[in-house]
Length: 80
Image (cartoon, rainbow, N blue to C red):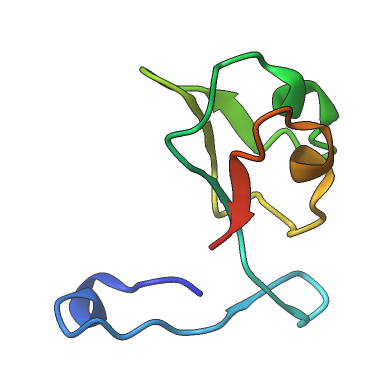
């Protein structure tokens, strides 16, 4: 789900569709992240980068494949 600026204030989320029209949700990395970088190397679409205090996932690039979650030692990546 994504939040459009004019709908965010109402807490309204809308479905996000990929290139082929399929619904998907981006993963997010929670505060359990230990910044090991395992997820970044596993991401097939380069949606993960190092943030200030933990790795972050670009929701516009994420294809909801879950490969990041499968290699994370602390289970930090989760579906949004």
